[in-house]
Amino acid sequence: MSTKLSQYLNKELLIKIVFYMGLVLIWQLIYYLCVDVLQIWKFYSFPSPIKVVQSFIYIVEDHTMGVALYVSLKRVVFGYGIAIILGFSIGALLSRLKLIAHPLRGLFLGLQTLPNISWLPFAILWFGLSEGSILFVIVIGSLFSIALGVDIGIRNINPLFLQAGRNMGAKGLSLYTNIIISASLPTVIGGMKQGWSFAWRGLIAGEMLAASTGLGQVLMTGRELADINQITVIMIIIIIIGVIVNKYIFGSIENKVLSVRGHTPRP
Amino acid sequence: MCLELIDVNKVFSHGGSNNHVLKDINLSIANGEFLCILGHSGCGKTTLLNIIAGFLDKTSGQVLLQGKEVKHIGTDRVMLFQDTTLFPWLNVIENIEFGLKFKGLKKAERRKKVLDLIDLVNLKGSEHLNVHQLSGGMKQRVALARALALDSEILLMDEPFSALDAYTKDKLRSELLRIWKACQKTILLVTHDVEEAILLADRIVIIASQPGTIIREIPISLERNMRKDSEQLKKLALSIKEEFGIVNEIESVS
Image (cartoon, rainbow over all chains, first blue to last red; front, side, top):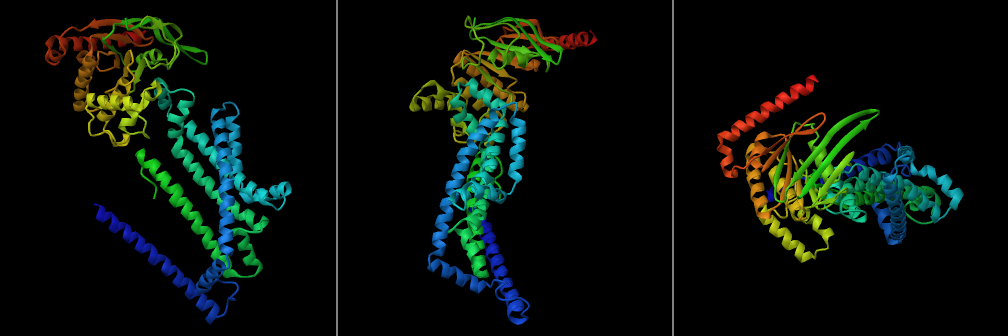
């Protein structure tokens, strides 16, 4: 059973490696044909795999990458942390409201559809081209997903769980710590995961316009230097970090929470 | 008396129209008694159980437990639900332990009590399973252990076996009787299954619907291990079923 599983996993991994190697090969082929042989594209308007690797090594060696990564991750952790604190408070409050809960939820859903870069003009008018603006865009972008996740998670708890819990002596705060948090967890984590995606996008967008360091700023420097290879490196790094956090942090928490409850973990 | 119901009434009001679900219910249950309430679905028997448990407010009347009036939810009256409501984020041990956390017991005492209960309901070896890994019968065992852990005055059971297959039902009924005797519990079990009531109860109370009123009380004194083959009880079952039918016809005509 376990050997079969490991064979399957190895096979999956193998397919993945072959797929990406093929992708890079096709990329190199297109570059070679269109830039080198046919010369229909200029070398500065299309990235080359080899130069992307060279560019990566270059910005790692001159510490641009390290500094940018450190600053960006610090910003997003800080902003996302604030969003979690605010989102949980607003969500918990929202789940207890009766009369205005419905219009409020509609409003939040509406605000959630607003791409977070749309908040940047506001942010710049309020905070200037500063850390404050970037933080604001991160927080406002992920806040509503988290709040709605908490609100919906609490509202959708099977009322019999609460009845049974009260019947067995849980009340007030102990009802929250023993039932409400656990019962709403799958939905809450879903909201947090979505909130993270928005926070990450908000970070890059904010840094592209309002920062003097960070991944988004290095991306913009690439544009100013017309260095398409550096731009490509940063884009790949942004994707990789996004995927790692989504899949290996939130994904593994989510799968654990779901499999205890007997739901099939998501692939 | 363990539990007394005095003139309990329940009226549900929906936009001007009143639905008299329970009418003048008077009932006493002695300490250690096994009482079955028998009635059609929709006769208000679950509503009555919810009122006793404190999940629902009654319109009028009194509920006394050991002579004292009870109005709110309390651990002295524990409900076992039809679909068990075990907490899916906890395993077997943690589910059984749940209510003990609020009783101020030390961890070691709690564990000992839980292990004793696991023995009692025959769940040894399944302690660390998650809820979704349990069969329907095992879930009811866990739910029973979880309720017993609270040392309540009375167990309220709302059709606990109705979702189980015939074999499991049979097995769990006899185990419930064994545990009832061993723990000297007072049990109030609600069911629509005539045979189940006859097999389990010291006394059967039949409730007719619309409005829910007690129409008959039948004490059953025959030893429980003789009940399955008793001709007399087979006749009783038949007569209850017939009476049910008649009651229903009259109700629907009027």
